Length: 279
Image 1: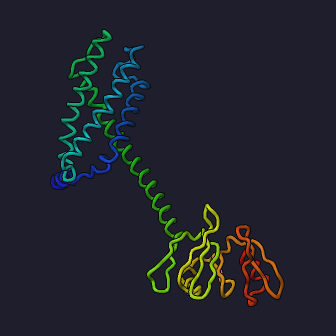
Image 2 (image 1 turned 60 degrees about the horizontal axis):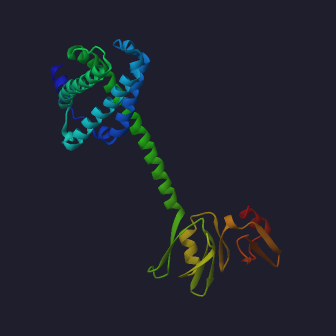
Image 3 (image 1 turned 180 degrees about the horizontal axis):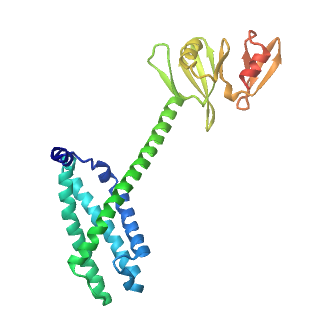
């Protein structure tokens, strides 16, 4: 039993999340203390009457500043090696200092307003009992903020990964040159000799980029994306941009509202098949 307790108190405490979340934790803590004192009026605070609001504002500000300064102090020391024993001693001395600052500030406020001051021992009794609630509140706040940050970072990573997967790099035949483009911008590609022209839909209209490679090898590089379709030996299209089919059995053409030219289709494709491909 004693060994278990000793082992428990020698366990290292992870304070890293508390340090990184110190500002939102202490702000929320100060606000909650302000609300708690106003709503429940513990320790005969109702005797303050119309002075209650000003008093609770002072307490709320102090219960934000003092814990924040504690976290700043912890950040300056090697808190990563701290155990539960170290943290217990710190909290003990912190509550004494914390209570004294609140008591001293409360005394100044009561001197100005002409109210009766409490003794430090009585005030310490009140603040120590509230400290348990504060520690629990800080623990819960840190947990909620950490979860929120984790979800937010996860969403950002997903967006970054999605953006990366939407980009594609097309290489030249000798691998020395390449084009990194967004797949949703690639309208179509056509080949002329050993060069392939890639046509992109940009803010400034259709932009042509040329790469030394055959269309067949380029199509192999991007055929994992189902929207690309090799409609002709000299043409490859992004089916997302093509909406209509013209022509007859002698020859079909694909049309897009972005282009003034028609894209020829190989005679090996049937009309029904082509209509299904472009939706």
